[in-house]
Image (cartoon, rainbow, N blue to C red):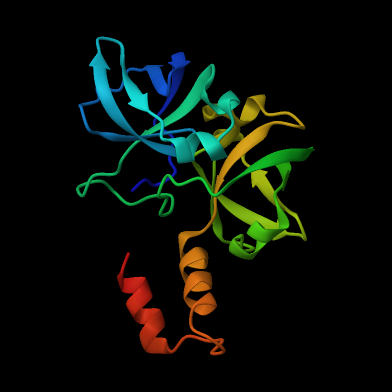
Length: 205
């Protein structure tokens, strides 16, 4: 599990034959889970200046190769002793969105992100979302897009400062929205959860 707080801007040294080689200050160990641009991957080799990660076929079928080039966001998996910040991020990319509009504001920048309409159900106004592994808050939700306002600190300390109209983004929607939708879709005509079921679902995290 991750929190969506980026710990380092790392660099891709090589990506071939499903193996991603990362140059990083982070001292990884074999078997560690590390999120690269929001994708949870497993360390399979360690080097003096970084480590190797292996990408499964499922990951490669969803995430564009461009997300594994140049500089990338890095977050090691959360430990039990860590403070819980950000929000619950699994490192499972649901879809790839596209920046469609960027509007500077007085104290931040608005980004409009386009996604396939079927994913809008899992994107909640004032709820949490992970964009390339960054924990962010959704401002508004539209038919096939949503709006984020990024504060100067986030821009300065992430790769979002480099994003342009047309940039592809790894998106992980809200885990609770996905679980609730799945439950409702598989319980027949009953369209609501009991409070007992809601409590049970929340206690699972």
